[in-house]
View 1 (cartoon, rainbow, N blue to C red):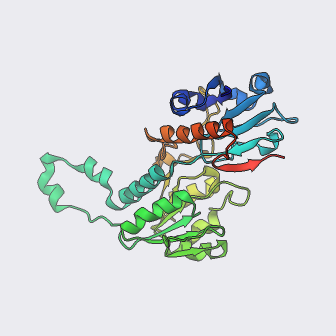
View 2: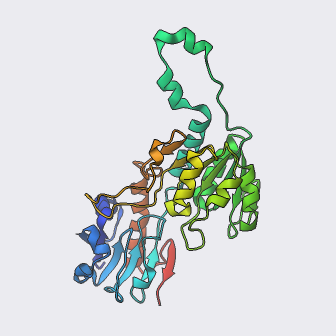
View 3: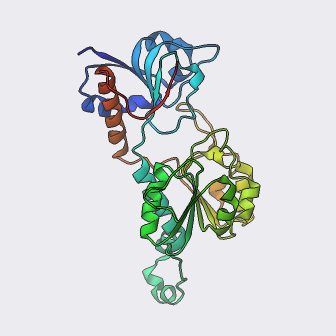
Length: 327
């Protein structure tokens, strides 16, 4: 069996152990810094690789080095400039994050209804009598309407759990099918505004594309209930940042749960803020640092799939999750 040449770039390097322990193929692994995703300085090292593993890849002024497969160790492809890929290159991604994201969304909705964290903060045994008699009723998810923008793997896992809580589940996705009947209603984009009017919770679970960028703008936010909560677990730029901040600050929607942001550091010590507005200062917003899928189990599962792809490439077998094949 020939040795497979693997280039791991940036964050991917942290998961060399997960890859090598699960891959039966013989590997020669190069660990390259995050800059290798953008700089042609590293092209001589990358050239001739069987697989390049990176979340981001771009070359300006023409094609970069030749290699066989670009394996994204995640689902999102907005960090990949496909025009930079060499001829013959196969582009693959990997999922395995549907379960933790679905659990995060359910936790977020339960927190919004139960106010569990607030109840815990307020508990004081020295004020037991007053606390007991001043209890404030909280909500429940049962019968609430959940609208999901996008109905792929993540949304379907959310739907399974939401249905178990007795929620009404609707989704907007002009491409998706629903063979399992997980949604009470699955509609196209032309019905989005009507569905948003009925929503208690809106979850963004669609990819970021030129078509979906800014899909949640002032107009769309204005049709939502004053009590409705927006949950974004996909990509920050799906939402018009200034429009959302204004709607939240002015109480035109009930709240937001934001795990994804508009700007990210490209490397350590890169001083960048996640947004232009202080969402974290608003009482009706829950902010988390792009962690909804970041479980202890996730990377083992993801790099298990990547290991399978490397083995398949070595043995001339079809690859999983092929997104594109450059001619």
